[in-house]
Length: 269
Image (cartoon, rainbow, N blue to C red; front, side, top):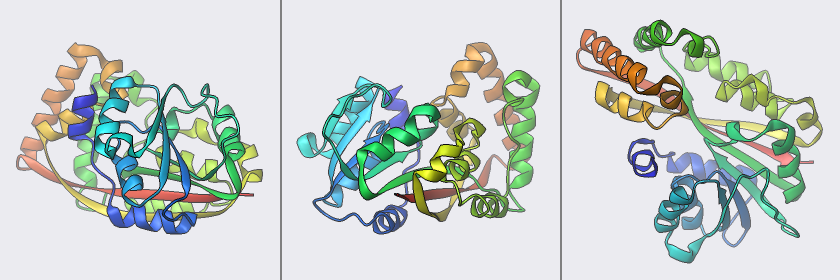
């Protein structure tokens, strides 16, 4: 899966990474932790900015690719689950996580991150999330309906497609608790815990619109790298891929599906 993940997952805009680093107050030479580095898209971007990176990921093949992408020994890697990895005596100027923090147990993650940050250090969470506009929402709803027909038990836990304005306005209302804001952005309600409000402040939201053009095969290739494909199994995944082709044929064979690239920064109290 590491090779497919590396090929089909979109990168994060350089200007968004720059904005996040500036908001976090980190500069060349600072020590940072990355949680869930995957194949190293963000790792390489942090190394390129002169940061000293320690990256944690449970996948050894993911780490192999991340090491190559970051440039050999330019970053330090630890293979393991963040909740279980021991980092005695370590303190970081910032902790980063890109499209990975929803995998972390919220009963552990928010508190452990705070314990690893120096006083005033920053948590930086980055992801892509749905952000439809009036022209693309119809396509997204059609794709969502296909998933609902094939796997109703999975879709029961999925929120429907959202417009970008809805995403950003809802995030703004939740700035009092970074975990509640991140739960809203990533659409994982279980990530919100009350204690996070007492651990972080200066919660800020940064976003960029990414105007993706996608064919059916590109959408399907991306879907194969997600946990949804494993939950569906081969037979239902094949049915979903066929439905994606049918939907896109109705819209001319390829579609514009804008998304939001989002960074959330919060400072340890």
